[in-house]
Image (cartoon, rainbow over all chains, first blue to last red; front, side):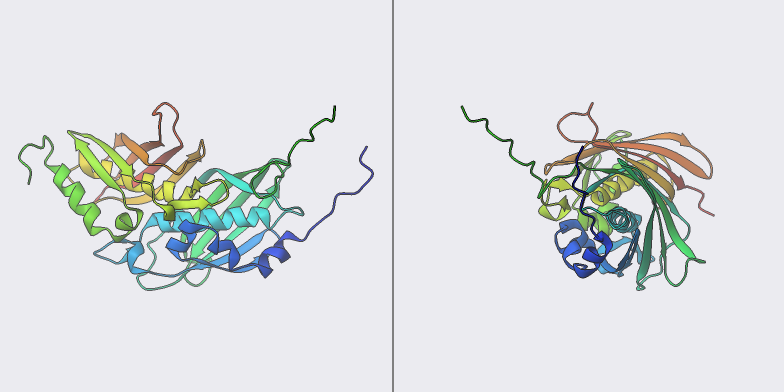
Amino acid sequence: MNDKPKKQYDIAAIMNENINVMRDVVPWANETRFRVTKVEKGHVFGVQPWEDHLVGDPETGVIHGGVITTFLDNLCGMACSAAMTEMRFVATIDLRIDYMRPAEKGRDIIGEAECYHLTRTVCFTRAWAYHETRDKLIATAAGTFAINKARFGGTRPKPEVPQT
Amino acid sequence: MNPQLTNPRADEIDAILKRLPFAQTLGMRCEVLGDEMTAILPFQEKLIGNVAIRALHGGAIASFLELTAMLQVFLVSDMPRPPKPINLTIDYLRQGHAKDLYARAYVLKMGRRMASVRAEAWQENRAEPVTALMAHFLVATD
């Protein structure tokens, strides 16, 4: 038995302190220009600004659905990390998006994601995108995420070489 | 219009891609042969989602697949403009490596109001898809 208790971290608080770093290390998130505004335990908020280069319908100036998918996928993934007590990376297993109404031209989209259940291997999330309140939704998402094995910086610890 | 094209809608696909700012941001293009279309997403550094393992961002792949599905519906219909998405489900099957990505979409059902579409994206091997998408589009024009 391992008698040393596993160290517990408040990942949500660490994420909140590094809120701008989280986007900067993701090139595609930099391209779509969304911002994370608040991280709480298992809950993440963000803003997706309207931008010319994200328009999916030149006649109406509405942002492309793929931008909302990127935004909600990322927020859901962060909500998983924010629900944990040890730093782990997650990978999307599947994601479902329902489009309720088009986003309005020139307006910011607010996003909110929640990790509502966590097992040792899988996180269950849902997310919302809207302009003002959740009563008038642009889109909703439901996603499941696989929790990656503990690693540091993407590399496994080196195995000990037995001395002969 | 290119008179050698077997499908006159092919030229329109190209025009739509050029007109869509978001398609330009992704940098995707399409090759059409009759009613078959292959979409190509040439690799760019900005499409990366995880710099540590150099994987493509799931959102970029999903956007690419959604556009592929949308254009395939347009290609096989007589709609005046591309259809609007109702919902979509994305299955991330394998990691997308820092390489070109290809996709094809299949219209499973073309209804009067809705179209049901499946799309798959792959890299080196078509039999090992990176991501699969199932989407519904509104095709009624009224």
